[in-house]
Image 1 (tube, rainbow, N blue to C red):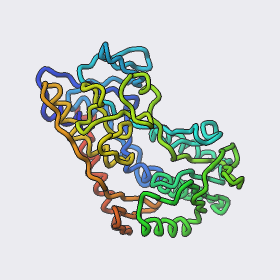
Image 2: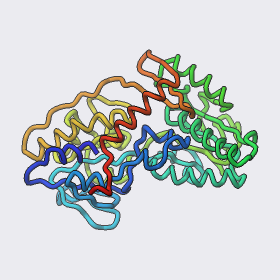
Image 3: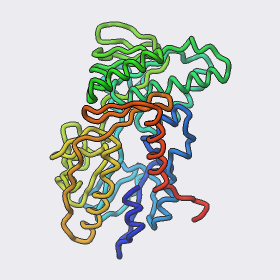
Image 4: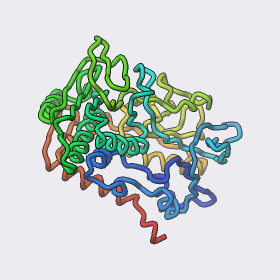
Length: 366
């Protein structure tokens, strides 16, 4: 989105910018917990890509990229069509690695991609209304797992209260093979242990999941946890089609990029966001780093198109995480720093809405 806007604000003579996207409405991940809770409407947390492309003079191709013909310089689409490129930038996100847990592919509810999860959420709410979902389990103790189980809890209980159903029939559980929020400091972990307990969410730390079935989760030690719906937030996976491109990949199958955001085996292929791995400065998969890659990516795409040398980008080593709690209350984490409160929700809401305004376009005005 930043690249589209950057080239729209300062067009590059003799060039055409094309956006290929599977989705026409793209979700902003920072606001998704609020959408799940019901605090934001769908349109408040999604950007209309057709309007954004039109406003910035870009061509939009509605399609799913499934390959790259580097010799012919074409992006291959699932439809069988292809799109010519001179310079290409890949930011297709990640999917769930469901193969590491038996039964996860059949019975797990994957959180990635987010657009698909919102459809699954509506089905989950309908099943809860019908009495088919009472026991909800989230697998994964990172920020995504914590935010998700708390947000889903808020939404299902709000639905039940509004419809005068008995909320006591619900159970919510979070299981993680590691320590809760292992990449955060001890004070943040303690805060969320307290918050989960206060919300009645059972927590199992250091206990890997062996299998997921239609009605329970089986732990590695044989313990069974009732589960009518199992949300899976663990182990991100790169798109399988990357392996067929011949591009340099890291051990996880993600595109291996250097400081200029060029894939190290092809100077005309750039990559950013969760689908890429910065080989010299590896960072966790986080929307913060994806967003901050926007300006250096746009600058280097412009330089490459002009025949100039791209310049390196060195992302910060740490970032501020604002972790939601299923209410209008946030815990902030950065290194050893920790803070929490409703005021942080107000600050996060303001930052998120400001970011959205930068890319939202009124389609009726085009």
